[in-house]
Image (spheres, helix red, strand yellow):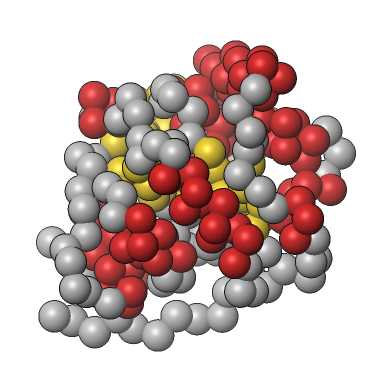
Length: 237
C-alpha cells in the first residue's frame, strides 16, 4: 500500500472554549431551527444555484454514519442542508460561534464545535456519542476550506471516528461551490452550476492504521470528483 504523504500545516484555533463543545440535544427548539434553516437553504439554492444531484438514494435515512465531504466554499453546507434528509450533526470550527447571527443560528440548529489543530477530546467524544446514538455526523476530513480549490491532504479525525465507532462512511463531494466563482456570479445576478454526489456508504477494513484509513477515505472522495478537483489525490484512477 502506498504510504500516506505528510500533512502540511493546518489551522490551529486561537480560541479555547471547551464549554461550548457538546453533542446537540434533540428538542423542539432544535427541530424548529433545523426546519427554518432547511427552508432558507432551499430558497438560496433556488435563486443562486443550478444544482445537479447524483446518488441521493445512497444517503442513509438513519445512522450511525459518518458523512465525509470535500470543502470548497461557503455554499457546501447550504447545498447539503437543502438536499440531504435527515440533516447531519456537523462538526464546525469554533471560530464561527462568535459570528453575528450565523454563530447563534448554527449553535441553535445543533453543531459540534471543534477547536482545530488541538487535542479536542470533548469534540471527539461528542461525535462518538452521536454515532453511538445512531446519528449522522458530518465533517470535512481536510479540516478547512480548500485553499487551492482542489483536494488537500486530510487530517486523521474522520479516520479516527470511523475506526473507533465502526460506523459506515458516506462520501459526499461537491463541485462548483468555490467562493470566487459563486460570489462572482451572484454579483452578475447569475446562477452557478453546482453538483452534489453522494457515494455508496462503505466501511473501513479492520486492522488498518489511521494514516491508511485517511488515505482510503480521501481516495474514495477523489474517485467521485472530476480529475481537475482531485488535487493531491490525483493519482487515483
